[in-house]
Amino acid sequence: MEFIVYAAGPIKGTTYDGCSGWREKLQDQFDLQIRIAGVDDRIRVASPLRSKAHYKGLGVLDDNPEKGLLEADLFARTIDCRRGVMTRDRFDCTRANLVFANLLGAKQVSIGTVMEIAWAHLARVPLVVVMEEGNPHWHSLLIEATDFLVDDFELGVSVATSVLLPVVGTGFSTSKPAFIQEPVHFMDPVRFMGCS
Image (cartoon, rainbow, N blue to C red):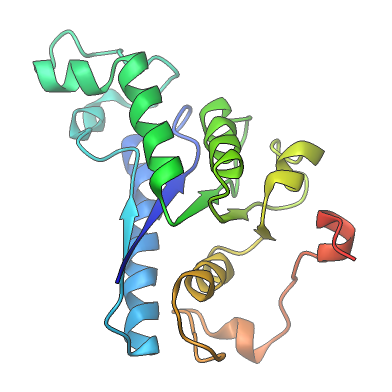
């Protein structure tokens, strides 16, 4: 079976390499989890940056997806207009099997990522949010919309994998097995997510 994970996270205020690097790492981590699990399933990461290689030379990206598109081809101008970005991102969030939102280290609120989290919540798509306490996105509504809140990227990958794969057990690992060998800070679900 193939699963689709939408990789939500800030784009504004980052570079193409900065916001595409963690998404590539996410795919690598899922591939590793599949190998460890020994299953024939596939987890494919859907990135909002796919088909947007023309962002590479723009430096720090802003909230105007049409910036620099006058020189781009017709396809880029179509997919990157405001309506194109909104339509494809909403479609991805609502058709995915899981949304993985990486907010670690965010310096400002990403309105686009908050929209993606809301779409996933509304569509009842399982949502893993990776965010540290004190992050600009730390808000009661966002936390309430989140199914799984963790503050470690690799832990988020393991949680997402365990939600998606029909394998029972604790055989999952990460490329950084330290979380098995030494204590790790888990977000207390009773305190942060209202679980009781």
